[in-house]
Image (cartoon, rainbow, N blue to C red; front, side, top):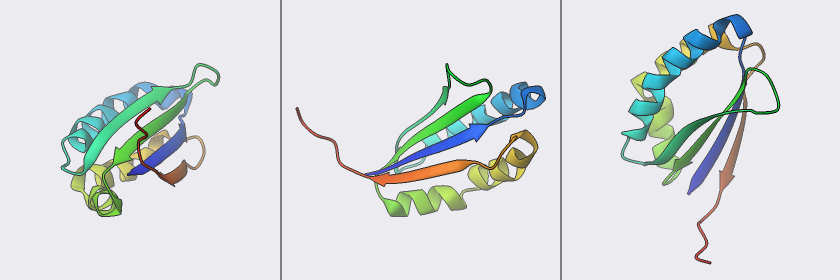
Length: 98
């Protein structure tokens, strides 16, 4: 399983536009075959700070997502929303049965 944490600092005046745009990204990404989960979290410690937490079946699924029309369209628009470059962290892991 591939886990991605994409941290985004959003311009305060662009927050509503960002949230509107990200709704379709989340819905379309969740519908992808290789997606396990795709959630946007808002920081309770930093203003206008969001983290997209993504779980994918494998690297092929991530590649298909990154090439998808909905993702590429969002990344083009994201430049308007971001106050700083996005920070993405990628992890490989597997669930534990405890």
